[in-house]
Length: 413
Ligand SMILES: [Cu+2]
Image (cartoon, rainbow, N blue to C red; front, side, top):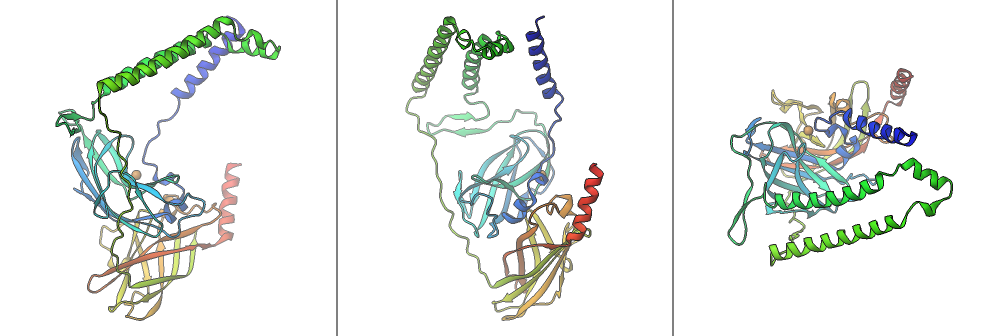
């Protein structure tokens, strides 16, 4: 075996090994989204999964309803939210979105969005694949990426009948979108794969290193022979003819096609009755105790006394400890937890001690700016609720952070 062939073989082995030994990516990955992106971009709240259960089978439906606010604290280093669509985040094509409604309007695709606005959504999905996976509502913002809401575990069992996705066309025919046109897609892929493979093999049979040697020696003219030029021309003609053939086939097989329609609009604003304003006085974070403390000035402009009920950030709700139910996952202490009377401005301290800050990588202490943002909710005795954005950089104990980071570095060394 020549030295060139040996090197080429080594290269192929190396590629194969790196592909075969790569670990399988698992889990849902919400913790991989940078903390500031989750905290400061969008807050999801009132999210419900109906039916609220874990066991499903293929073809079963689930409706996800909820609200989200695109926060005023949207970071400047992330593209401005202008166009976005609401969807469902799951591992791979596991669920199928059947219907999507935003602020009561049927929404086939993307919508125009704005910072500071609230959107009420409803997404109806069908489970397509069996398996156990986490399903999240999500807002996919153009140039910024997906921002996800709270997750719900589902365990989807295989159905005895194969999964179908039937739709009725305007000509009255019903087609199954799971299989429709699959033969054509596979056929054209095979044709182009064959052309590509012939082209690749034609060039790959010459040892790369031998050709590199020619380049080194300055013998460029010997690299491409007359035969190579003819081969190149033949392939170019074959590709052009195949493309034209495909176009002609599509035109004759499906006469009078209508291109896919884009229906993009700005949803009508929700009617929100705001009667409370907020001002953050101070915000701190204790990294060792994982405690966020926010002092907020709350002014009640309404006609009834109000009480702080909840703080929501990213996809997490912190419920006022005094109002928490036994199954409430995250709580906060509100002090003083007294009613704020009409016309009154009161300074309230919120204490959010929770291991989620570090467990979910929401407040990584190595970041240049550790900050908090979210929605603060109040409610009066009649059940009227109001909420608004509060956002502030978190002052933290830098001495402790320094020590933690030093220990980390020593550990690495
Ligand atoms: Cu998840």
